[in-house]
Amino acid sequence: MQPINIGLLGVGSAPGNCNGLTLGGGVIGSAGNVNGLSVSGLYTGVDGTDSSIFGVSISAGAINAHKAMDGLALGGLAVGCDKDIHGVASSLLYLFCDDTLQGVGVCPGYVQCEVYKGLSIAGYATTTKMHGVAVGLYSRAQELHGLQFGLMNYAGNNPKGFRILPFINLHFGKKPMMDQ
Figure 1 (cartoon, rainbow, N blue to C red):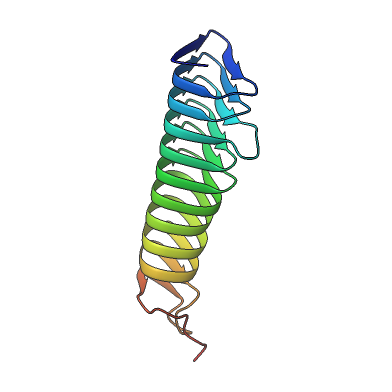
Figure 2 (cartoon, rainbow, N blue to C red; figure 1 turned 90 degrees about the vertical axis):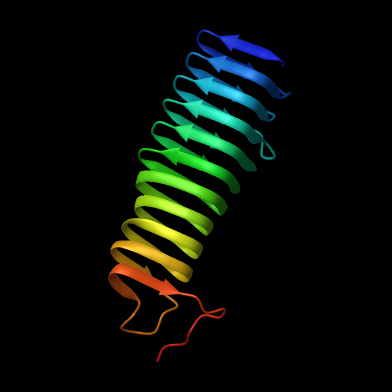
């Protein structure tokens, strides 16, 4: 479907891609990729296991991709991807990615990913590996390579006594430190 796709209740593409400008009053769904600018009232998502969202995606409800989300994703309630997010992702309640989030993530609620590379601004953020800067009420990284600013900050690779600290925590070592 291209270059302009408009649906009062929704827009769907099976098995192909939605390319260009896609506007759905309720839902935008595709078995393939969603490429370009997509705006939906409730939900934008792709169903294929190799499906991705590329470009700018805005939804009052949620945005979800399986393989990748590259570009700008603004979801009212949630933004998520089963693999990688590259770019800027923002939502009010929940921002998640099962593999790597590389770029900027903004969520007053909960942010969760395996590897985070970039800037995280969140109420509560948890990750296995954090490379960059985390700003929030509580930031938790099993392995930190960078800075955390917030009310409480946890870096699992810091020595005992320095793992959980108020206001600021940091770790710039290349290898995780052993318990001391």
